[in-house]
Image (tube, rainbow, N blue to C red; front, side):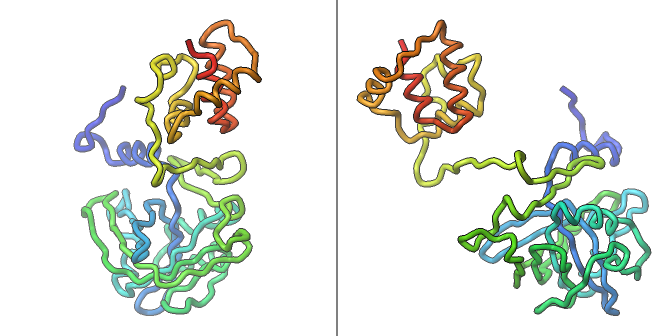
Amino acid sequence: MLTISPADTPQNILHSHLVSSVGPRPICFASSIDAEGNPNLAPFSFFNIFGSNPPIAVFSPARSGRTGNNKDTVNNVLEVPEVVINVVTYNMVQQTSLASAEYPKGVNEFIKSGFTAIPSDKVRPFRVRESPVQMECKVLEVKQTGTGGGAGNLIICEVILMHIDEAVLNADGRIDQTKIDLVGRMGGNWYCRAHGDALFEQAQPMANLGIGVDALPEKIRNSKILSGNDLGKLGNVTHLPSEADVKSYKESHSKKFSNEEALHAEAKKLLEQNKIEEAWKLLLANSK
């Protein structure tokens, strides 16, 4: 395994390792404005939300690795502490990338990238009409993490107004992850599209505690066939099927297995279909 010390690694190499291993990263498409009213639009992938009460978003326009200078966005929010965070979808990604070019100060990236600037309701920077979710924010703090190239500027924002396109909502009025078609940033020139087969659902353990992987029978826990994900599904149940259920299952399913690996392979197929209770019944019905 490669082990590196940040203190002994060139900044560009360290940057590459970091952004290639931490991803996909959400993209903050930030609209800002300077004291003279000049708009700026730029994407940043050092970004996430950090609370909902109050709603806090943080993004970090890092200093230029070539010049060590701050990005225009940082200078703008220091002059006018307001910003609009627009989410980036697959249909916008090429234009968003164009807006990331380091145009000279004063150049309007809305015009360069072909996006439509629309007025915000509570802040001075414009919104991007093409983005399905636009968050008007007030900037609470700008925290510098360093002064050299690659150093971050944590722009801590409070979301004071959100605009959501009804086209990405489901019947319950919530954002439908299959409709919004978000993209995330990876390392190098790579992006990730949160769409189609890339999406999957995973039930979250909340009030009900699963039995845990440590509670699985040793033969299952040490299986050569079942993966860590498979064991996680088995360990996420709150209780095992009853003896009566297992007996009933055994009476109605007479399939025999030549060895334990064949049994676990069959259970794995059920787990891949999220038939977790049936997988447990199969395993328990054939345990010795």
